Image (cartoon, rainbow, N blue to C red; front, side):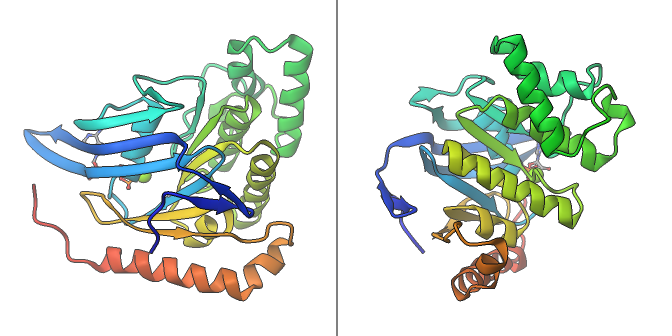
Length: 277
Ligand code: ADP
Ligand code: MG
């Protein structure tokens, strides 16, 4: 278990220059006259250029935390900031891929992917080139003029990923981004995300239930407790991604840390449920 103040990415020591900061954040939802404490006094710092994954039992508040970072929910107590500024709502600095791949139903595939590029006033030709490139990468050729209702779940998820990757926000907030994809497509998308991250060094916070995915992609994996969610363990990871996927996944280093994270998550999942609040 590591205390994260300083850590290294590919051998480069990063200081505590938080791109994202979460301080003392709790979130209580009220439903049918009952309150549900989803997150309890959570602290987290994510450095610029870090790729951080959050894993933990279902319902522990992972999506809630990501939505607060996206500015779609506000905390009951505590503070969240990105780039040194308090988070008060959504912004183009933070690109969110939601668990339920919220596309604009009235826009075509092409228009969905181009949406944020247009809002950022990217010149027309450049916008066309970027959208065409992502249509190709995401295997959406031939569906450019289709509407979301005409697509399968996996295709919708690829459009959602394309829409967010294409405009290159400073911070990527990904909620189980590959959950609806088949195993082969998931690996292609994971490697595309890794490639983009290595080129651009964006800050990534990804929620996933897939320990292998978290360990394969991240610099740091944070494990949350059962609801009310708190961070219980942080694992630093420095896999050599100049190697092939096969070499990484079959390496002793990968398997050791993967097993450690798996055991940590398992311990949380099998903890007795906390008393109702
Ligand atoms: P996770 O993503 O870890 O599976 P969530 O963040 O979606 O968990 O949910 C955490 C807890 O908060 C759950 O008990 C869930 O039912 C509750 N919750 C989430 N969003 C709402 C909401 N909008 N209203 C009421 N309860 C909510
Ligand atoms: Mg969730």
